[in-house]
Image (cartoon, rainbow, N blue to C red; front, side, top):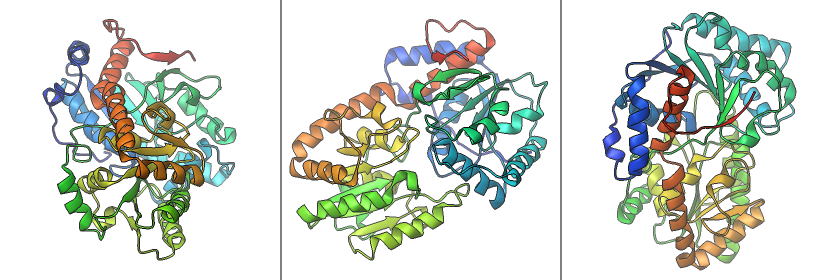
Length: 424
């Protein structure tokens, strides 16, 4: 059997003072007819990246709502994850396609994982491309299968997408972050549109005092008396850490005391991560004010929280981004936030109102300089951003969306809760 991830326990009642009363009532109403239904989430890794972070909160809250839910991880060797990284990049627009051998490797590992999977569920939720073809091995499944794509599919490499399309077409539903991400392709199942969300009570997002944040970042050599810029993301070319370093250098010309932290996590399904980490270290060129840190430096959720809370500005200078949960994380902490004008980031930040949207290292530098020059105005924007996150991007809303979909798939009344959809 595929390994099960232990997600612990969470209580919906703990969110009652954060989410609106109406939303909590919707959740209870939608959960009632689903009591005892069996749900499994399938993904490639239990740590590193937004999917894992979402699942560690979503799954225990589904359980507290009365569903019998678990999370299982597919298995693979480096040859498989090298192929899936190529697929990931291609679906976000990289022209490099797959060789016949790579296609064979992908299908072989999906078949092997399917052989270790017991299709005894009411709902199967498959996250991202890595396990997408497991469904091909269950033609008589009684479960409702949903594929959840977490990346930017707006300009896919069509050769690679069409390689996956026969598998995707077998699903009962597909979910994308934004309407613009739904590929213009035949044979897609009905597609639903909703963004991901952050857990406001997780260690990464819970309330942390400025004093505690300063104490924590001080342990990593940061001078807490000098301004800090931080980007939290994987070491990945789409996150553009090299562009962040260029922006920092532009800021340093005006604010020589500024420091930069690039904080990431290394995931086993991202074999390119180490290569780009090393490239980032080389690009920093031994600058003593650039701190490049990861989970291997004991940077965990609380430490990430501290870096974000302590920062004069949080950056997410992505050049491609499925959504970018780190933006909502920074805004939830009421931090001035500067981010790339791409993908799901534009849904989270209203430029000039709740943060800054930028398209180049120079624009990123200018925005950071503006935040450093006028921290009072930057704080006003950030507080508006926090309220926008409260309304739209917290986990109870995400749970509500899933419960509404499950009810819809069973033909149950959804009590007026509407889901945005795109007909196949």
